[in-house]
Structures are given as C-alpha cells and as structure tokens.
Image (cartoon, rainbow, N blue to C red):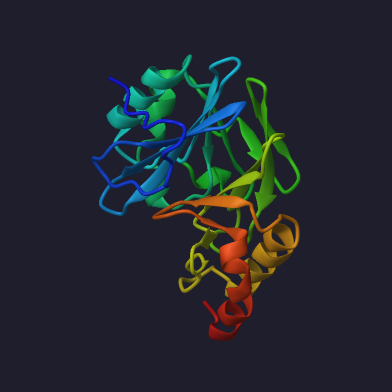
Length: 227
C-alpha cells in the first residue's frame, strides 16, 4: 500500500519509520521520506507524464527507499547525491545496485562516494529525467562539491533541494576542518537568495522545509554570528 499522503496535505514534516509526505505539482510529484537516527531526508521526484524518477540522497535504509521507488513510478533513472558526507550515502551502493540508476554528484565530491559517478556536475549544469529538468547550484563551504537542485514549476514557484547547505535558521555546518562559513554564506546569498523569489520553497537534508521569504530577513544575523 502506498504511503502517499495526497496533493493537499503536504507539510514537509516527516519522521524516521513514518510515512512519506507528498506534494503534487502539475508535472512533478515530490515525495519526502525521513530515515536514520540523524533524521536524514530522502526525496523521490516522479515525472507525472512519464513516471520516470529521480532520487535525491540515498541516505540510509535501502529497503525502505526501494519500496517507495517501486510504489511510486516506473523504476529509478537517476540518483543525485548532494554532498559526500557519510550520513547521506549509506544506502547509495545498494540503491544503485538494485535499480541500475545513473549517478550524479558535484564534481569536487564525486571521488569520495562509494559508487562510480556517471555524471559530474557543476554550477549551471542541468539534470534531466522524464520531462523534468533540474538546475544545478554549486554551494561551496559545507563540502567542496555540495550542490542544490532547482525545479522551476511552470505553473507555480521554484522548488529548491538544498542538501546540508541551507536550513530553516541558517546555512549548513562549517565548523569542521576544510569547511568555510565565508564561502557558504556567500554562495547561499549570491546563488540562492539573490536569484530566487521569496515564494521559493526549499527542502533541506534534515528536518522541516521553509521558504526563502521566511529566511531572507535573517541573512544579516547569520553573517554576524558566523554560522
């Protein structure tokens, strides 16, 4: 039985071992699933015209992810990894092996993944599946190759999948060696907030969603506090 919650009930609030939440757009269905003790978000995007599918971050619990894939469309065409961190890739090998999906990741993170990356992408590239096109946004700082994906709904606003680079309340963690707050806040400002409208809905790698309009007033605060 599918755990699709319906087109009018999407909140983006999901918990591990709970059902996914789903948003029905005219051309695209977005399903959000939480997995693991770290409450990682996994996103399954289904082209409504073709039933072809793309997965964002095969984070953990491959059997649960594969069940959702089987319930929701016609196989899995693409797995995009937003960044190299271990909690976002624990199910990647198993999901790719089971589906034969094409793998996509940011160029500067690709060599750190446990699978061969078929398509290395950078800022301004595009990822295609079915009749859907996603724009790639390179956001440097959380990891060197972190990417976000933007879907421009012709009938509505932009939908942005930000990995661990942007959350409600701030940018991603930059306190570990090799990370850079200055780089990440600059890229999030110039490549996200300066480009997309306030009604852009974004879907992070953990926790609840938000909109750019809700977060934009806090950018000076984030810069001042340094995280």
